[in-house]
Length: 171
Ligand code: AIR
Image 1 (cartoon, rainbow, N blue to C red):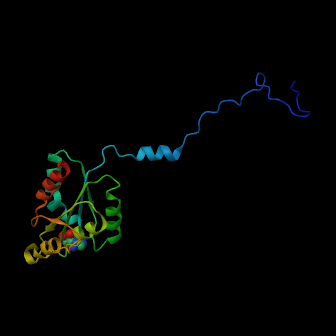
Image 2: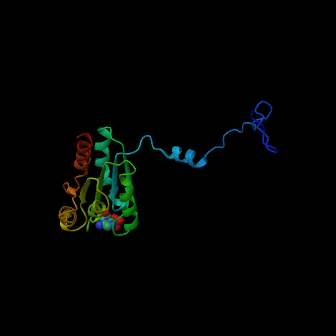
């Protein structure tokens, strides 16, 4: 026969009350994280070395819009804002971008620097400057060293960059 140990009280499940149900605490971090989800995240990043390049890069955006591909536009100079370029390109894949289109004039380092900081395809657009007929930018974009690829379109050829990005995405 079982005897209760002296001093030990068996739990009385019938009479013991459960603690009152507390409504679950909101989890702000999770809520914030879910709010940050970009359902319509852009697939192409169009970046350029100066706000003055915008009219030259506009056709790239038009081509993407015509193809129904979401894109975003940012101004960042490889020489004037190198940190911004680095951060943008490092985060690009994680943010869902598939292609970067980079346009710049003069010593157009932006496409090459972008390609150095991401393994996404980078399409470079040499932009016609005031001197040298755009040859400065063309050579800067086209003459990339082996191992750091940049696809180079024509001088002021941003429309083709947009069309090519669409083909890459739809390949
Ligand atoms: N640029 C800006 N930072 C580095 C370069 N290569 C380029 C721009 C622009 C040209 O220099 O892409 O085409 C002149 O820039 P801005 O701002 O003086 O008009």
